Amino acid sequence: MKKSRFYLLGNFRYICTAGSVSTMTSSREVAVIAILALSHEYSCARSKIIDLLWSDRCSEQGRSSLRHALWSLKRILNNDNPGLLQIDRRRICLNAEACIMDTRNFTDLAASTRQEDLQQAVSMYRGELLEALNINDRQWESWLGIERTRLEMKYAQCLQSLGGHYRACGDAGNLIDTGLQLIAHDPLWEEGHRALMEAYTLTHQKSLALKQYESYRDLIHRELHSHPEIALQQLYELIKSGRSNFPRAIPAGRAD
Picture (cartoon, helix red, strand yellow):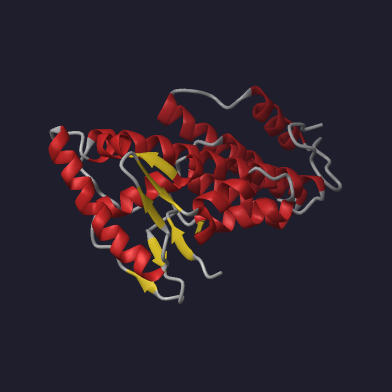
């Protein structure tokens, strides 16, 4: 059975069953897909969708706007993949057997402890949820912000877990890449700076490890008026004193 593919991480893309890219011009049509994709069993009440996307309109206007969006979506989706979008008087749903969602695949892989699954999850995270989508509705913006944060945290946790795998086997190269990805995601995320300090120490680049700590220390002092955690300060002192002898790997959460 050929399936429709939806990509919500980064810029939205919809791939038809034949493999061609289809265009949806309405931002609210894309938003309906996202709400369904991130709902339990790809199913959501009409009333919730209206509340999220047309909260500034009266109930009748909201229902009318949803009907118009659903008519357009059904024409696009079901003409390509019959039965993909299912509608009744109360609920809207997507047929889970007829589509593939990157968000669902990402969260499933991110829940794994296997290194290969975590690496695949990281590669799937092309950017924040619906990166370029703009809808001027406070309820939608609140919902989208929560979902973006939830998925971003899963991405960061994947990177952090991968860092643990790379530490355990002394893979300094991948540990450096992971640290850089964490910092690119959030420069204030201490785990990214720890990963780089450990990796530089593993590759006998003491000066880089010390500079990494110092730049992070200055950053959080400037941005948060705070200081690095005690464990990171202790790691810095060990590296500085030359007593941080890590012949193979640095166990996660330890510096001795």
